[in-house]
Image (cartoon, helix red, strand yellow):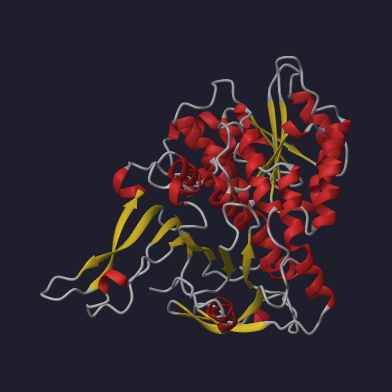
Length: 477
């Protein structure tokens, strides 16, 4: 059951992901899809809507499309009323397993969950499951996240709730665990003795894309940091779990967030907003010139921060996080920079400094791993430069078309919660940034920087690292 079945998320990502699972033989023949939304289009209208979406996003054989459409039904109605839930109950035998996917605005989560509970649709049988899947954002601050968790737990058990973050469906994100814990040359170096600092970057070229009204009440910090960036931070910094069960993985990730040192909103955080500029060949307006954005808006479209993790492995190692819209290049990556080797061996040569040794995990748009190390430049004297070894998924493996949701939806069906966030992690993430939100709300003197669209971001973010004699890895090569 997909609530919000006529929306963009369903058409662009969820149904194509289900289609790819079908191609890989991972859906049972008695699979059924029930769409729920407010539009009164009927079964035939919904099937035609899905057909167009499947043809537009990823194509597919006619047999694949027909297979889905034959197994599709549609229910219309307002989410706050009882009628659609009665209709769903009539289509859902008690002995069937079911996923209820809430592809809706977050304001609908509590309404739908409460109605599902009242209709007894979340009751599990001895050999059947009922699971509730919700998309981020999970609240807009710590109190609202805690309130959402409390209300969800009134109608479902924690192991029935799957809080989905599509970043964790990406191959390179999942590969972090393999890279760290399946390679004997990596784990011994993964600590404060060998790592100088870590950078996590999520850069976007797009602006608010017509979402000015909703984004203006959110901003980059709420939108990206407690979910996407903190998930990447947790995977990079977590201790080895005792085994690959969901409980063990989630426990170690939560420990990372609980160990984050309190942030100083003035010294450790930079907030900024894009001005007018050029992205590629296109001129773009300033954020305050976007539709439905107030001309005096103080909402940030960029945030950078310096974090410290107070545990035995990471004390003294800074983690620099940044995310922003309307930057010069779309790029999501994690760079781990190792400590520099001593220069003593090269003291009688022209070498003045050694190139940095860093390991970069490219998450999007390309997926792969890159290692940079020092090599001798050919010639009679000793001169050193950096060289790269690079692994790309597309070069080594035959990667099939993917939306990033295939693994996550399949894991929901199989009951594997390893890649999903429990209530504890959600609330721990909000707990880290709540003091920043409070400071921005109460202290009007905290500056909001302006950066040119199409660039690297605000100079204040460069100064954040320059104070530590470091610099960001370039977004624009």
